[in-house]
Length: 264
DNA sequence: TGACTTGTTCAAAT
DNA sequence: GATTTGAACAAGTC
Image 1 (cartoon, rainbow, N blue to C red):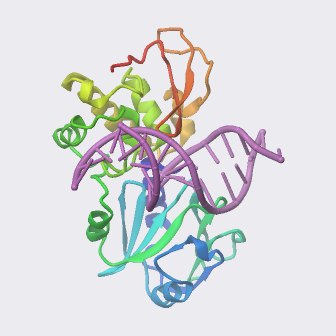
Image 2 (cartoon, rainbow, N blue to C red):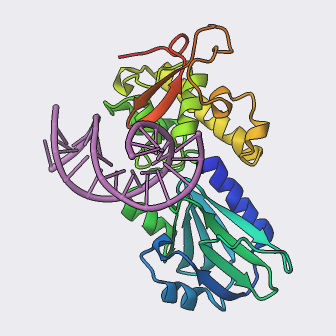
């Protein structure tokens, strides 16, 4: 479930493995993966070019090839990248395989095929046209508060709404609200500034830490709900209550009713 | 067998 | 009209 920290780690991965290599061939084995482009168009456009840089916005990753040519990745639920140096066996399940001139390759692997790959001209225009909010790590507290405070929906749904702010998904939203001791169904417009401040601080803290650890869950073991997505567990901090599961905003939401205050 | 998972999108409801 | 809610989708797991 690639959320902001995972996508940031994919960005680092590309930068460490795949920049400035001439592209020799492109294989698309799952055309459904493509968004707004065709196999032929993707191949024709990428072959002969090279990746010059990358940029992440929310859960989207953009690879710049040249001015007005960016490769777009969205990883859906199970998408990820795999790089294979020359001579290493490549993953045959790759939905998209980019072969470089030095015979190394980069694969987009996506078992459940919910990811998307596309070509776009301008990243800022794309974000604007699609209406995505500011990136969750770029937004400052003032704008965060401004964008959220008038909403009447619950805090969890809002945090996950990519048009309010981009990058937070189901799992990280649970962790942010757990650390903030705030019930996911709390109504935003009932929250005071102190509480919104707390959510903002926890969001930034958790995302930054996760990015610093390259989204490696093993290194985030002090983050309770990222590690244990289960109901009926004893809440570790202080309250000693039990964790609960409830569908909120159409998503499985884990929380502790004992220490996450519900404000309605 | 079918219920459940996720992010996104679009339709329906408020 | 704007905002909010919820269902659908895809496909793999259990």
